[in-house]
Image (cartoon, rainbow, N blue to C red; front, side, top):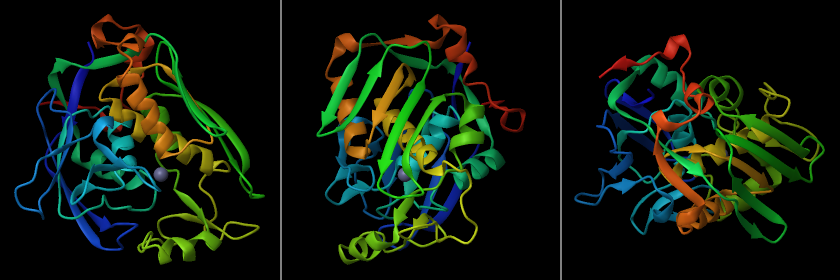
Length: 306
Ligand SMILES: [Zn+2]
């Protein structure tokens, strides 16, 4: 049996928002089974919780935003990716600003914090969204597709006119362990010449070499270099997992993306949810072994019973 998970106890995470440049604090609380992931803006008074689901995504330019107008939380994708990557499907997140802290531009800090906090198992089976038929979305030459598979596989391609990036492709077979070792530490990236333009538009005010890989016309500017030779495509897969987790369940299906971004990932989620014949929600107990085994946690993260 594969059970739902939550955080073992309350934990506080503080950092700066990459777009606002302002300090922000998130408090992650344990939650009961089937609660899902829900954010609450505690700086706004009495506002509704924002449930992490594709239908309430309000913006997808340079980040994924839950909600719209004032009651919104920006840049949720890396934290959501780590929660999915560790099999944590229930968590109540209080946040005192409009944006999840960027930390080092990857999921590494969230993984570290959750490792220290511990993961608890709840007494209810996980539910999977099993993909039954292909669904595809396109935008110019970019596309994303999901199709049936025994477990979550992500095959992504990025094409960037830069000598260090060029075309990168990776097929990633999801497991918690693979996520921690190969995807979680990959940082977001950007071109130095875009930084000025984005800053003038009021974006990435908090962006620096501490929270992104930055490239000039020829090379990586960060003194420490890259964490993986193909860190760029690994980060794309981190983003895909965070955005696709907004389907609301663990996924048994293969996702293929070509030059995709947050908007395309959200379009894919919405099209799946709008196509009831494309999926079925089942209890983990009725799934093939590999889909369940993928959620085994490495010993250092072994969950306690809640
Ligand atoms: Zn990202």
